[in-house]
Image (cartoon, rainbow, N blue to C red; front, side):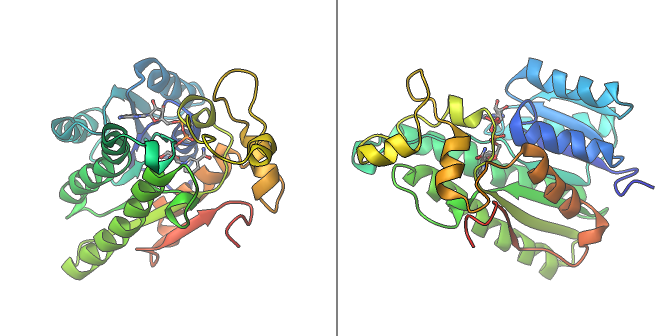
Length: 271
Ligand SMILES: NC(=O)c1ccc[n+]([C@@H]2O[C@H](COP(=O)([O-])OP(=O)(O)OC[C@H]3O[C@@H](n4cnc5c(N)ncnc54)[C@H](O)[C@@H]3O)[C@@H](O)[C@H]2O)c1
């Protein structure tokens, strides 16, 4: 029997990259998946990918920073698929830029999408799962474990995800709630985030570093593969499904005694 048969999962940011791979992999293990995203067409495509291979999925529009929408999403999930027992707080953006030039508006946007969302999702999931149990998986980053130039706000948001995850795990355990909470810290994973949101990451860096990261044709586009080559001992970027495999493990009962931990999937970048 697949490890997640009969379970219901919500994955945020499921239209793309790691979120889509997590949704597909959870479904392949038998979970019914509610794929949510700002990008409605992308979330629907993810659901279609799953149903097309015999799985069960539903798509919904969700802005993870919208407090009221979280209640609606839990309700929608109950109606369409059953009560959620897995939540992957994956949606995120990366706003690069030197601290001295960084605006408070961008700082607040970064925190709202990457950290407020994880609080809102975890709170909603704890309320939903407090009797029936579940697993909450918060996607942080290696940037939540160490600093990077021109990524101060992103690092702060992902560091916040790391420690909030631990606090939530301890609180669930102390309250006797059958809910585990873990964070996942990907290294350089080849997803569209490198092309769309990491702008300003190179501003002010020495020319040789910028060159090493090989800006692709087109302003502010960055090659994940080139960055991985420069920074990752395995010498390549990770694939979204390699992160999804870890997410499936943390969602399943195979990880029943693992909570409050940070799980790195990075080709030895942090080793
Ligand atoms: N790709 C990497 O190298 C890498 C490394 C470490 C951590 N991460 C983290 O992994 C997660 C997924 O990133 P990815 O690389 O798959 O990026 P991606 O850009 O491919 O996917 C992110 C998804 O989040 C959605 N999203 C953005 N803001 C949203 C909002 N307010 N509400 C709902 N959805 C929203 C986007 O529409 C998109 O579909 C992010 O939290 C990211 O910070 C990625």
